[in-house]
Length: 306
Length: 209
Image (cartoon, rainbow over all chains, first blue to last red; front, top):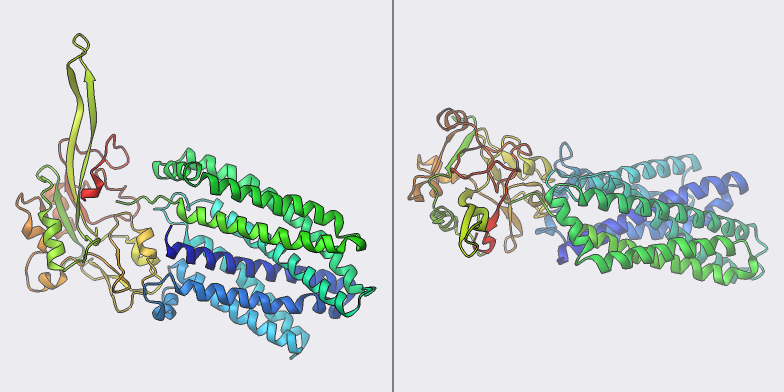
């Protein structure tokens, strides 16, 4: 584990969280828009858009620091034809530009709504391509610990899980903000936020389930694979074991236990304080869990190399 | 002009004197930690007690042999394909070169190469690797490693010509399988050489490589 891999953890986690949050926000806005109108939907999402773009920007900035020559970074998109790394950086940059453009237009309500929607759809699509490219970067024949289906599946799971819980935290913050302005919160917005949080809780429990299926299958496939894969499995079970265990426990408590209680409590107006604490801590715990998981990802690969 | 330049390595002659590795390091003034050519000892087997005299140990397939390896200037170079900056190219004569003025130092090629050929120079912030002594070749001279070998275990030439002269073996332990990148190497095996992926031994004294 060196500085360079820590930088890659930062970049991949922030970028995936940003894509996930954007997608989750899109789905929420579509559903809320149908139920309660575009205005309510915009009130729910627009503030968090800025945060999503900032998080991605920080991730891209961090990625510069794993380069031996950071100033040469623009050349990273020279080889779109065959290099997934080029495709990753290009799609990351396009997602950033589209996301920022959408955030600005949406904030000032500039331009026709149709145009803003088209940009949002394009951004979402590029975001999905970005996460796919990120996973393909690691699908190298010389890296058996990475070169399997678990990489894209876990990258997308991380994307959606972190995205959902980040938006959960954002919605709770939005809820508190609206409460400060209108303390009784008889507002439709408060009801919408609470029911949205229930759905986020459901999503996080399901995504946790995916992680808890993928992880053991992945470990078994490593342990029964080529010698380098077995060596990776031994690293995860051995020196990285405690981190692995903490990562699984934190994910379980954050997405599973807190997710379950969030689902139960979000409905009840009297328990809105508890709802807030649950949403915030679920996000923090899962963020730590995913960071640890990604540290393990970078620390456990054993290459087929001399 | 050659279509694909390749190295020839005679494992039956190599004594692991490391003259090739030192000549390479000297010619290219490589810093500590960067070795474009390396020589590996690969060995295995063990000792079993004799059936009737258990205090006497009988050698059981004990073997060791050496393999000198640099960039294989592969026919299908993984480094060229993955390099995001297009800093690595395959020249018309098959030599794979890194352009240090284009490299961004992301070290992605390091993960993709099965031979550990691209190595990061932290002072320069770029990747470096064997360039087949292109400056010497241009003067009609041999690569430094080839000239340095006292056992005449190293050679180079057109891949097809080398194959006709020495056969088609291009992967012995501890080299990885040739399927990944199709290395431009022709090997005369040692009598104990084992095919890649079917080895019963291990690299001996890796810290000495």
